[in-house]
Image (cartoon, rainbow, N blue to C red; front, side, top):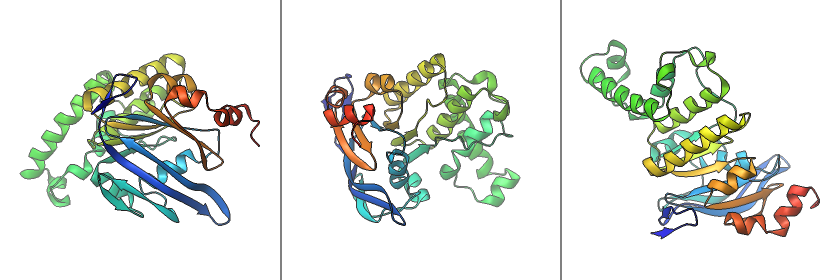
Length: 265
């Protein structure tokens, strides 16, 4: 274990991304990207719009299959995994655009994140009998703890579509936590939020990292947030890596400065 500047104890490399390249026809989305993530770290990926940040997360969680490179998770190396395999291994993901079930309650939305943990077959689940009933009771108790943790007890039976945007983002985080991930990928969790909502989400992200011990990979445009909470930052621009290091190192990197000022191209 080693301690970061933020006071977190981080372990060995849990996720190692090597030489990832991704193309869509003749368009290069990512070119030869390499970086790693250490256990219990809060790792940020930043860059201007169109830099390839979401594409990078999509490669990690199996949505896209890169043409080159490999991803190693807990010592196992893959050229490509599908999304279900990634989830079963312990990697959860939130998306930039909310994909919640708007007509379902907060409780049921978060319960859907327990699906991979359920062992009963579909018939047993349908009639809620025997093993399925016991299993659902256990999963529901786990989900109630997440609801308490995220301070959304008052909305547990409310349809998600009726909630303010900031609370919907919190439900999205809760559904990802229901998977009990070792690594949590957050794609712009604070996009579209006001200052108060951002402060709340920052607190929950830090608490997830601290209390659950979850390793977090974060895409975020708010540089104040990134510099405040991240241990290390990787910077992409036009699908290429132009910086990687602590927030202080990245802040002082001339390539990063020029990219954000729009003078590098």
